[in-house]
Amino acid sequence: MTDRHRILHLSDTHLRHPAVDAEAALAGLLHDARHVPALDLVVVSGDLADDGSAEGCAGVRDQVGRFCAERGIPHVYCTGNHDTRAAFTEVFGSGHLAADGTDRGQAMPGGTCAAVSHVGGLRVITLDSLVPGEVHGELGPAQLAWLRQVLAEPAPAGSVVVLHHPPLAVPTSLIMDRVNLRDGAALAAAVRGSDVRAILCGHFHLQLSGLLAGVPVWVTPGVVTRIDLSTPPRLERAVLGAAATVVDLGGPASPLCHVLHARDPRAGEQVYLVDAVSGQGAADETS
Ligand SMILES: [Fe+2]
Image 1 (tube, rainbow, N blue to C red):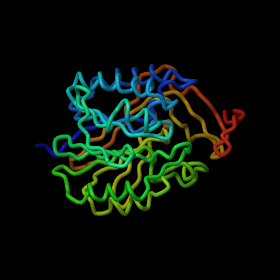
Image 2 (cartoon, rainbow, N blue to C red):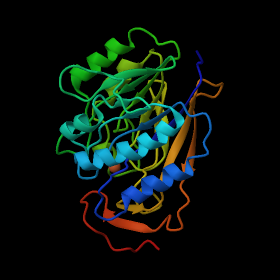
Image 3 (tube, rainbow, N blue to C red):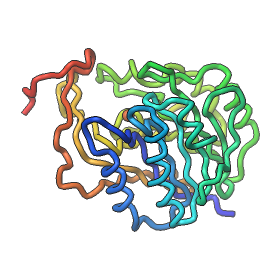
């Protein structure tokens, strides 16, 4: 059993998106990731379908599942704010699928989509931060108690936690701390001193790293769009340009994250520019 693991971390696929060909963005990214060697696992950290539908979820499962079947590796999913628990469970079960698509996860009892599985000694824990109808995330006391219970016994190669909403925010952003994980302090208390090696998130559609109780937090860029923070702080610009992260766990620099960008001649092209707080469209006065 090895204590080194390589994860391909995708997020925010947003299939059935009204303004972007999200299916093509995911297909292009997976095609361009085909040469990444030695992958042990693919994780997708939420916002699977833009409309929360089972059809959108199935589209993600089919594309990612094919990539994983060719490599004989498992694939793991968690919910995001665009998802619905009913469609997620219908398509993904626990969210922890084997290379052949069978459900290999152990779901948390009680109606959330949190679950756990093991990949060669690495414990993979998905949390469900979805608050129906809201953009921000929350785990709640029951899920955090379950997490503490799961983490009580260390795993041979440690643990990785996957959830949609980051427990951190860029301090000058006008919006991030309104839409991120509300009970990040409670998550910090749960992982402090545990065997969790990394917390992998999505939601912000940009790459970002920080620490939570000493545990590295990584936010991977979006597949459907990238948020471009070169705008004035009151504006939010989304551009084309699918990306993902390769996360190496267990080496001397663990966790080591590097970003893959899909080859897209339209990368950087604006999808929308809005007022970050009101969400209303904004004039492009930034160029
Ligand atoms: Fe998203």
